[in-house]
Amino acid sequence: MGRRPARCYRYQKNKPYIKSRYCRGVPESKIKIYDVGNKKAPVDLFPFVAHLVCDEKQQISSEALEACRVAINKYLSKNLGKDAYHIRMRAHPFHVLRANKMLSCAGADRLSSGMRHSYGKPIGVAARVDIGQILLSVRAKDTAEKHVIEAIRRGKFKFAGRQKILKSLKWGFTKYPREEYVKLRKAGVLAADGNQVKVHNRRGALEDSVLFQTGME
Image 1 (tube, rainbow, N blue to C red):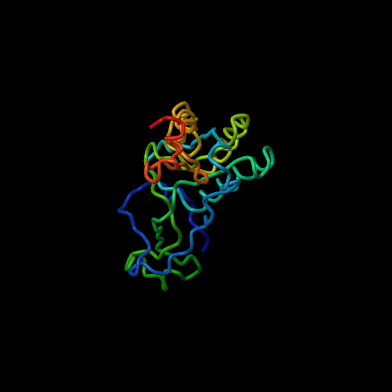
Image 2 (image 1 turned 90 degrees about the horizontal axis):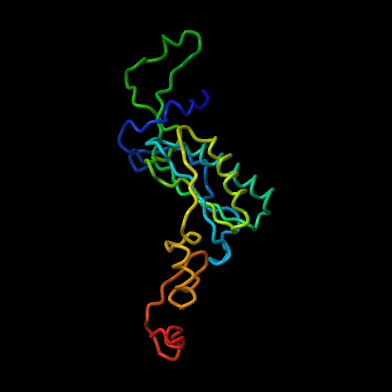
């Protein structure tokens, strides 16, 4: 018996049902890698960010998430080069999908128990997503904007339902708007910390403080 079509599990009907000591034998999620591309690129290198935002309350299977990741990665690596972008998948599949397996061979009605003991066995996992939830984000240079949006548009076809592609007003994967980020970075309030930034905590010796040396404090 093959996999059921994803349309059988598209809507959130029941409570979240996750892998636990009671729910065992759950198949591994198909998506294992959530960050692709130049994930170690410093925060200043990739200012542009676009998000794929869900517009429906639904479930997205781990197979669909992996297919989307592969499609976007393939397009961007071909058009930009593998070090010119960073994809981050932001929906994680934890909800276990079940199926009450039925026999479909000749004489199955003698062997099968019909709807008796019909609580199904785990067959896969899915992410439960809400309206307005970000499914994935891609950061790159400003010159790569049209390629990033086209890549996300192609990845969108792997999902059921409706999604929107949004250009972010923030710098990279940080929480700061662009103008504010540049201002705080020049002032020394923010320091690069990998693909994120950390805020100066105003502790330590004055002679070591960037803020004190620049006359900010």
